[in-house]
Amino acid sequence: MKLRFPMAATQTAPPPAQPRAQLIHIEVDRRLGHEWDEWNGRPLPRGGDFSAAPGLFFRFAALTVVAATVAVALLLYLIGPRLGAVWAPLPKALWITLGVLAGLQTLYLSVLAASYYSGRNLLPERLMERGPYLQLMNYTSLIARAFGKRDWVEHAAIDIYNTMAERRGRRVGKGELLVLIPRCLSKQALDGVLAIAGRYEVPVFVATRGQLARRVIRERRPRAVVAVACERDMMTGLRDVAGKLPVLGLTMQLPNGPCRDAAIDLEQLEKWVQGLVAS
Image (tube, rainbow, N blue to C red; front, side, top):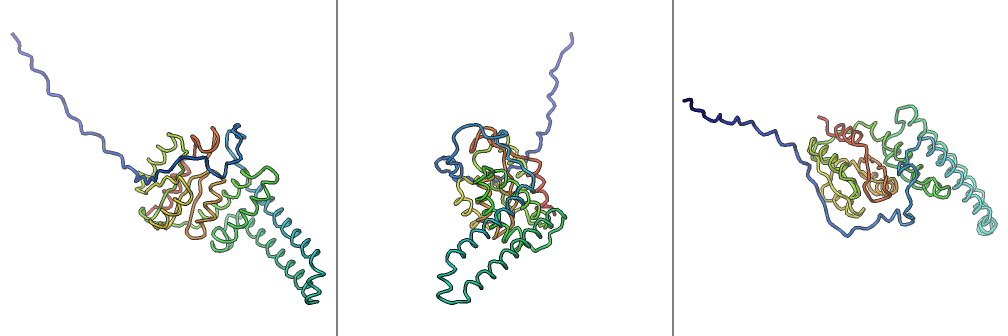
């Protein structure tokens, strides 16, 4: 008679735990982003993908410069006689000033376009992506709204901004980078963001409101930010933050309309995070 003994079960080491990202979240009541207050509930064009060639922004930016110059010229034409009655040389001085400003705006836009297409930033960041360009983006957005091209022009403007900012080759420590994301990401996108942040050990903040995003930036004082948002919210965020510290802004696709199940380019996000914290 043979005795059978049970074989001892082999124990395998558990797989190493994946690093988890630090998720900073302040709960507030959910509401649709105010930038989309006029949305009528219908599907967005091209499934919420507003990708556009950079040339679209430059065309509308040139139109913005012309429109601003014409508007001021019309105002001077109307009030010039009254100003001349106060001081005779004043109208002529104002016309000369307007001509100089129009020339400077045209020169700036030309240098901006040359910088983008030549692959070389021709001005320091304080005079480009962290300076006058932020104002040019916003004024151009106002003109684009009148033509129903707001989101496409803003997307092109943000792409140009990112290209110039990325060329600076900035590097920061892992604890000096902050990733800002909206609450409307799809589960797949959110999981992807947290996985990337975990790999590079950078904190993630769910920016439910613009003021909360500004608050966490003040409190944590990062040296650089990677932000995720739709074109409209990104424009507001860049205007508020990019002049103070370096920002890279990743726009989203909105297949189910604004503020719901948004998708993002996770490969681009990881490329930026990796590039910023590379030792």
